Length: 570
Image 1 (cartoon, one colour):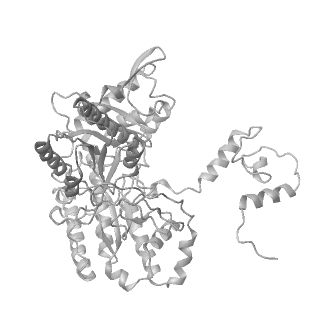
Image 2: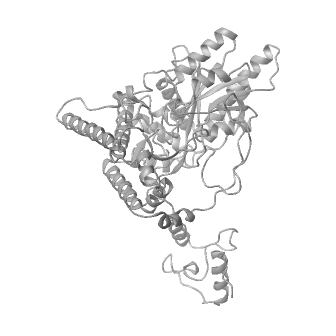
């Protein structure tokens, strides 16, 4: 008898259960004494003909969900995992309210409008401007709305001038989150996806923006907080380039700032956006989006889109609805959507206030700096992110430095920080992010050149897999196209990352790395075969000078994420 190369476990259990015969009726003394205890599995693909006791169904679903990762240890995601008790109460009490029912829930709609006003002022709306905005299901919808507004304004301007509207394009970096590319594909705009490099800190390169804009450019997506490394893209520098281009050509190109994470970080931290303007203080910034469920500290999913003035939201995109006895205006892609998250957003804004948000964000950045310094102090890892480096030294880390000198300088820095923290406890001014490179509390790191030379058999992917065995979810994936030969491990530091948890994380990373250093390649190879086969992915067309234009796919065997999109970046 030949051995099978593949077995379907569900089919196997199903046939064995059919052959075991009936065991008679079961009692229902506990959730586990129903027929689902041993006679049949819970229905998966078709609705059952008869229902089941509520406590049984609850127990079965809860047990299956135990197989998920622990949200607080999911360091791949920017999405918040902690909600205060009072906020949870408000969420539950209002979970049945539909944000689309304006006339039925006027108090909730008033709260939504207050949030828009608070964010508009937080993002620097200027005197005399009438900001408008809306909650969305997340930043993806908000980005699409911001892009649509830019496209409609461009079309109106071109038609008024008697010009065609056949070839709109939009500028973004290859580090852009997939929602930005979705906008271009879904709404038929040429995506000019510009290569990133170490010189541009793996973000949108202003020099390439200058080379790729033209009269058909509807706008530029600028990201305040790259998901790869946490760097803030230089909004003001790009704005200056567009100002000069308009002076020379008369073509007015707007900016939409994708501040999905940075919109709730930069306004509150001492570092801000690193001294550069990024918001409505720049006249060229017409709209900004942010995710309330990221550093806005709300659970999924709520995002926000704000235009600096109602003039920048074309009337063509606003629908007047006569619904359920009332009249309302709608300019979202979705209609029915939950209102509870909007209420919790307002709760956070009022409960925490400016000082509370600042404390949370500064704590996140401080823990991210400590993690960065700890990793580099090992001599095994170097950080691609820069938030732990003094502002004047960002990006100056050299691979030619010896591991010993790195350890010495980092330990000295850590000791200095410890001294500063001790002094702060006795009344001196505590350390803040003002002295460091601005960015998100994100730590992106990789093996040093010295480590790779000494232990060529150790792969970063294996570090990620072994950490997953300890319940930490830390992705290993490649940098954007043109730099995708470099893989990074990435940790997102959120509000719930306490110092004790950080200490445990560093300990586990060190122990896992030491284990791998002591084993050979044969021992490790089996780990990489435990992953599910990834889906095939189409190649992406890239327009613009210096951008890839071939549309080749990745092939049948996908070994690594080489196309710049990672499912856990958002």
